[in-house]
Amino acid sequence: MTSEERIKRQKELVETMGRMYDRKGFQPISGRIVALLTVMDKELFTFDEIVEELQISKGSASNALRMLEMSNIIEYITLPGDRKKHFRIRKHDKFSLIDEHKEKLNISLSFLKETLDLKADKNSGNAQFIRSMIDMLGYFLEKFEELKIEYLQKNN
Amino acid sequence: MTSEERIKRQKELVETMGRMYDRKGFQPISGRIVALLTVMDKELFTFDEIVEELQISKGSASNALRMLEMSNIIEYITLPGDRKKHFRIRKHDKFSLIDEHKEKLNISLSFLKETLDLKADKNSGNAQFIRSMIDMLGYFLEKFEELKIEYLQKNN
DNA sequence: CAATTAGTTTAATAAAAAATAAACTAAACT
DNA sequence: AGTTTAGTTTATTTTTTATTAAACTAATTG
Image (tube, rainbow over all chains, first blue to last red; front, side, top):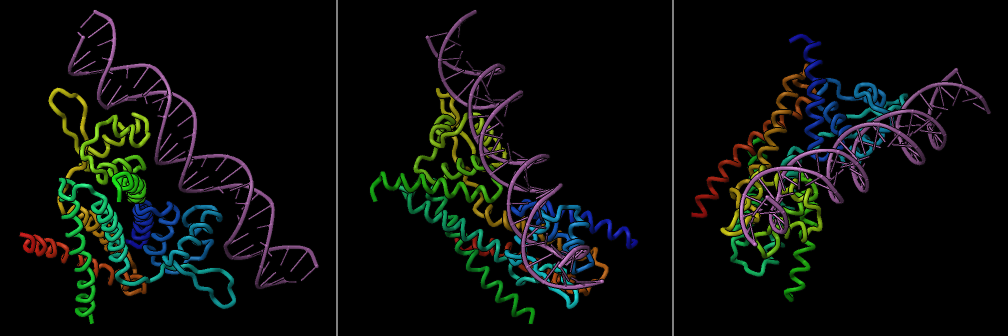
């Protein structure tokens, strides 16, 4: 694969990956910024480079970048003798993706618990099913922590 | 807790749970329908009851119900001598919540793999980080299946 | 200290998504 | 056959979300 081909494919990947973040609830421009900072070979992008590369307005860029920074997804550095901000993705904790999903499962779990709590008949069809979901989620959530420890031990 | 209190709380839970489904990407009305069918003691709701309970138009109800049925989240039964549809939540596979998250992690994994593939320098800071994420995700995804088997054995 | 740079903020517009009203259809009564 | 019931469909309106243009601010530079 030639270098131009590779770069073309990277830019395509920024678009599809951006749409994936979109589905995660990111606003579209935020998604594409994260994808840009993740996919391209360049690891530091200035404000202007982002505006230029993604063809967006300065306002949109400013907004999305602030939001991404506040969510600890990206960060910026400044360089001496240059008052531009240089943005890059934060190399967050290795398990953050897992933890994100764990958190969502935890939210589901508490809804299910509250639902069961409020059932008049704890043995109705739905109540029984909810109980079995609660049990299963509890099992998995506990195991996740064990898996993390196991993984860290294996990789040291 | 009196019965009226309980029902009041159930109705509140329908609203908050509906918003949770909203964040999952459901359209608002779909979320509240699923929540209604999950939370209330009544396990079968007719079209009209749903329209009445959630104060929505017939069109919205029809649309959301079709979508939910096509996604296998709810189902309806018909009763002899009654041409109304009676809707209820489907008691889907116990692991479907887990599988949903697994699927999302798989999507993240393939994006990361493609990203790494397209990196010019496989040892740049980002590339290294992406490699470690790929490795970790692979580990967890494999373990999920083992956990499911383990869980089933324990519960038989 | 006037001009330029690097963004931010705000007010307005555009685009997308959600919801409704009302007309419509198909089945079942009478 | 005409009427009622149980939804569906469609065209429109409302609401929300995203985006931009342009004015603005604070820091730097000549």
